[in-house]
Amino acid sequence: MKRKLLALFMASSCFVGSMFAQEESGNYAVGTTIGGTAKDVCRFSFALKGGVDYLRLSDQNVNPQFGGLVEITVNPLWGLGLEYMYLMNDHDATNYSGGYDLESTVQDITLFGSVNISNIIAKYRSNGWQKWNLYGNIGAGVSIYDWNLKDTDEEDNGVKPVGVVGMLFEYNVAKWLALGLEGQYRMHSDATFVGHNAGSGGMFGANFSARFKFCGDRNVRNMALVNYEPKEKITDAEAIAAASQKQYAELTEQLENKLAGQNAAIQKLQNQVKETQDTVNALKERLKTPVKYIPTTEETAIIKTAFSQLEFESAKDVIKPSSYSSLDGLATLLKQHPEWTVELKGYTDSSGNAEKNLQLSKDRANAVKTYLVNKGVSASTIKSSGFGAADPIATNSTAAGRAQNRRVEIELFSK
Image (cartoon, rainbow, N blue to C red; front, side, top):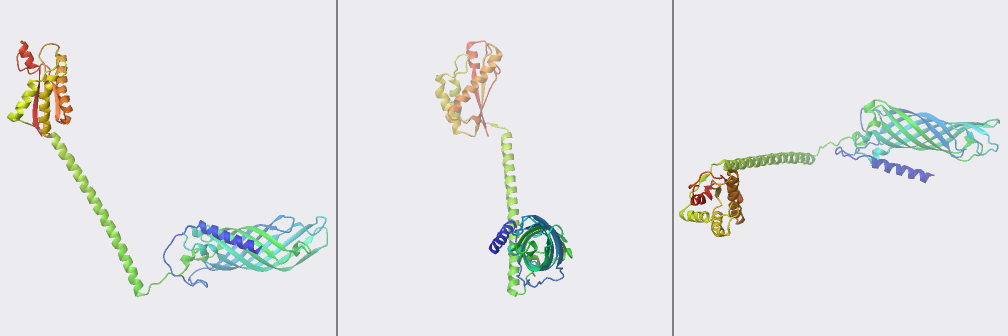
């Protein structure tokens, strides 16, 4: 049984330790807190509790129990207390035939020690988790028993030694009040209170408790160990210098980070200014009025040849193959001068439908553009448009004049 209790105690400790969030709240010296070093604190509390007990050797009835305790919390690690419990143990007597009912009461008075397991395994837990605490209790005292068998004259009473071990899980709902759930095992020296020669008197119990703590904030039971121990006083000159150097390094790092952030903001602003300037320059370039380019004699010859030999199939925008070689020469010239922009203008004679003539002039100018682009001239530098029978360069009353009016002209502009 002792091994089982020890295993239960260790398992509960590990479980609670995994629940608590460990948070370093500062570097503190390890003070001598066995006798308590903090000043102006309160250490006393009292609790009322009640629950049920279960007698292992009886007919397995569950009976009520209640009581209270007074405790002095020496420091956040341990405390001492005095507990009184009143236990009712009515049941069928296990060592009597005939099923006699046994009326029994037990009053246990024990002196116990309490250890705060939470402050051992989770010293640096956060403020929120400091409200939760797990205690291990162990104590010894006396058991005052009184029993009688119904319908018989047999009865007995007396005082026997008792030992108690338990675990208490407690939550501080306020600085002056804590609610708890407790499990206990009572080891009576014998079980006279259940009938003569009944054997061992092992008893399990479970209780709810309400603990009232004097002085509220200043009660030691509200303090985590890390908040109770005295803080280290730095008196050594080297330690002071090291602390100052650390503070200087932290301030330097903060200033460097701030400067780096400002430099990044400046660089971002400069990039935005450059992007804006580039956008403005591009817009100016697009809005700039083109300057008409006057070609040289050699360039004029190439251009004149290309358009004087330009022929289309009748009433179509299909360029005849005989015009390819001269257009190739024009394409070569335009590729040599990417700074030029080109405007192609298509015209027709006045015969036929004016609307169809306008569309045909546009198609023929676009056909020349397509040919030049296919030969490697940038499409963005060429603009094509058609004007139908407008602006004739010869009379439309003769076949020769109409032939001259069916044409594509070119204008060059420098960027």
